[in-house]
Image (cartoon, rainbow, N blue to C red; front, side, top):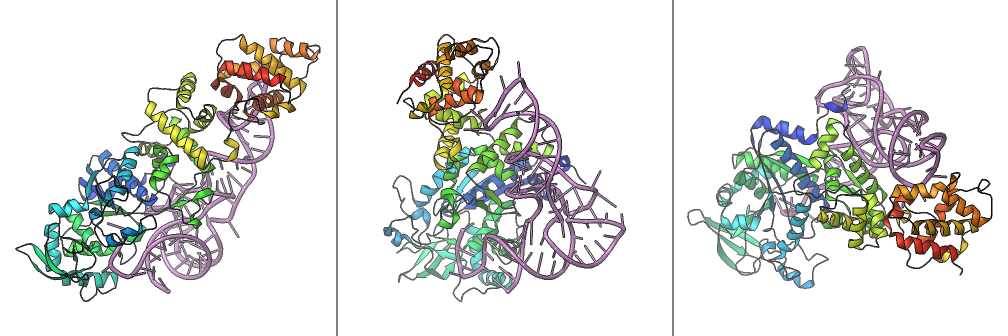
Length: 533
RNA sequence: GGGCUCGUAGCUCAGUCAGGCAGAGCGUCUGGCUUUUAACCAGACGGCCUAGGGUUCAAAUCCCUACGAGCUCGCCA
């Protein structure tokens, strides 16, 4: 049996396989920005990024590109669109107005937040837009070949996919000069020398368009044409393209037989499944966008989730408690010098240039955030007092945002609390001993300098030890011989939580108290000990 | 119906390509940390590797069949 140390990470397996064929590699991914970019696409880019880096790490000449299919037509008026978009159905996404008016066009509206998310994830591919590629003539030769070899391509589609193309099928879809739609036209002729295509459109018009920027290849032909035009050698894609007779199969045949190009190495990946809880119930049809996911998960943890799992396996993602477990696991691994070779590799691939990393654990931040009531200046002060690195304020802010969103959207009740502005009414139920303890604690704190979490911890427990100041004070107030005093620290903790939070339990006490202002504690404990409803 | 992928501890999953003692993390339980919070440490519990057959000295691993889960198959990401 092999030990863990001998197991190779999947990205390195891909790199090994691919490097046998040659040293120079172009890893490509793509997606149509027709709506909010979905979670599955993130797996695609992270998978591609891992492959790209693995090839580079093994000495290959590696490049990474991302193609936005901005020239695809709008399929329908999606639920999130205004009715007025009905007139744009069928037009290329790059030629449709932006839904919010802030972007250059429809495609950019959805592309921009996605590219921003890529930055957060430390993924930096060279970005292409399909409409620009077509308009620049990158596809020109492929378009000519496809038009000339139309029947051959049709035969391949028939043979590989088992479906025969329609009578009037054509690999090229002209954009109608009149109505601007790309999926309503039929090719009626073409001129290779003039580089033009004639068409008729269902809107009633006929016309001629240039091969450059006048239309696009149909998807099954577009894909292999792109491989050749850009030199793609590695490409991850979802299961939807991987089935027999699917677009990868036809793409392979078309690449070889029509474009004389060796198809890219495929990396087929599975979808990310959502946990069953909360607002993310898939039965309600709620789709999780990448930006939604990045709202709650630190980017490196998200990478970790994807990279540690082989592409062909489902990923189950649950943003409630399991997210905390995932983050913990990542942070633990991060701190573990003795992690296995494979784990170290996973970790290495989970980190990336440009990714923000702070040494503040997610769990701690959930407490800090709540202690500070969400005030960022206060958070920074607490972070500094706790001895964390405060240099990377931007990273801390990102983590703060993640935690804030997580607390609001997914956190289980037991991690939530809030420091009460007034003495909580629950304080009325405290025992005499608890009140005495709080009063004594208040006095002692008022005489001390700033204390560390451990100092607080020790101080509270000192009530149990013979001869300590706290014990004497309590015994005196209770009118008992200090030697006879029986104390249960647990009751003291309850008193503290009740006085500050109005509940019986809370975060690790010593550390928690050190996060709060000492003067506030002095006053609060004093007031709580004297509180009468 | 055709195809692809998956099925291993209560949970999440390694291990399957290349057959060689059944693994990790989390959770649970027990104990410890002169002091139980949700921190830390140690230990324990926990498995017919979905089922059945085959190949083999040897199968979670390879082959066949069944069952279960997911995805995909109207030229459309």
